[in-house]
Amino acid sequence: MASPSSAAAPERAQTLTGPLIGGHVSTRGGIHRAVDNAVAIGAEVYQTHPTPGQTWRPLLVDEIVLQQYRDKVADAGLEGRHYLHAPYLINLASPKAALLKQSVASLVHYMELARELDAAAVVFHPGSHLGVGFDAMLPQIGAALREVVERGGSDALLLVENSAGSGGCIGCNLEEIARMVDASGSSQVGVCFDTQHAFASGYELRTDEGIQRTLDELQRLIGFEPLALVHANDSRRGLGSMVDRHANIGEGEIGVEAFTLLLRDARMRRVPWLLEVPGDGVSGPDLQNINRLRTCAGRETLAAPR
Image 1 (cartoon, rainbow, N blue to C red):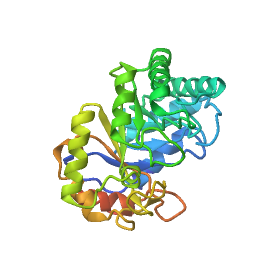
Image 2: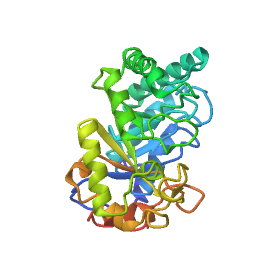
Image 3: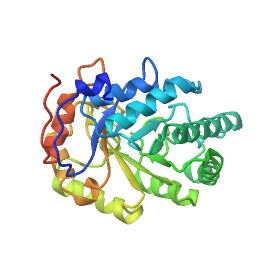
Image 4: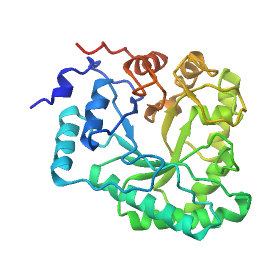
């Protein structure tokens, strides 16, 4: 039986020619509502904060809601296309033992949720060294990543997201991302590449030359096998601003042409692209931004819901 949301879904192209494109959607009203929200904007993949991003609160899903979620996922054909974004409070580089312990516990919980929800991956921001220095904290980060994978009991990937560069953060350049992945010693630990964060950190993405330089660096330091997801966001601030401020596609400093150039590269087309943009400023990524990104990828646009 079709769910109410799928009846009002945008019409989809019959043939998918990668990459899968989707957005971050709300879970207000329950985790099952996220599937409705994804379908309503024509998302082929979707991301959620199962719990508010600024809290440590765990998510306990009762069996009724879990079955509703699974039914909706199956009806929408979105099995294995859910990405969980862990809380922003996580800091694997903290010299404070209590914060490190809580960060690991939160990521373990999210990996357990990923197993329960059949999610593809857990995305997280690695945090800040708080003045101690990246090199000093790298062994701790590697050990923490291994612990999360071992205790999480999930086949889901654990994706380190590059940072925008402010506040003594770690992972604001590809070298640090590479070293964290290597330090984990786990094939389950991969990379989520955020376009806005990269641009804010000084990676030129507006020109073909700048994009090739960035992708060549990614290839050299990390390789494309660990790259499992792209966060597609334009930027409200300029190149090298070190400020995390997302804009709708084509309404920021990066621009539509940059996304078109990025999506011409076959290595970038092999992974899903997820929008984390404001949309209309209320509900987040919307059909208009989905279609802008689909156009950049050379894919058919979707019709508005009837």
